[in-house]
Length: 86
Image 1: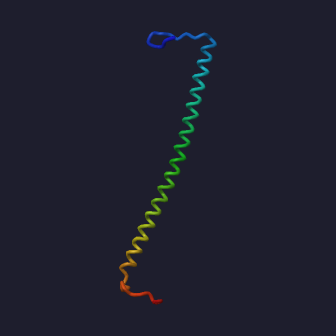
Image 2: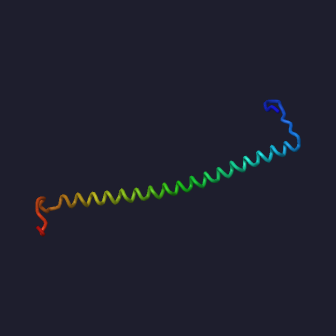
Image 3: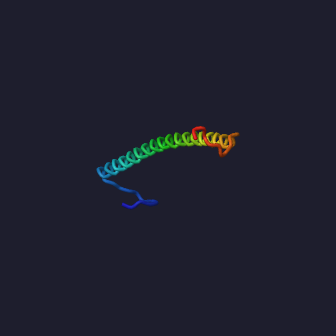
């Protein structure tokens, strides 16, 4: 039973049905795997998007805190002044 240009594949009726069932089963399996992979990719995309948003929010917060620290460091208070409780 060779395949190629100009050759024909001959199956007995039962063998042909088995071959078609096998092909359909393989196709069904591939389709199920593809659907699962598409779902997984969509879920991972949602996770990445949420993490990206959280990272951006944390970066904004860090910049604000850094600016606040710079403001506190450059305030008019003397650098070596002890707090009032000393």
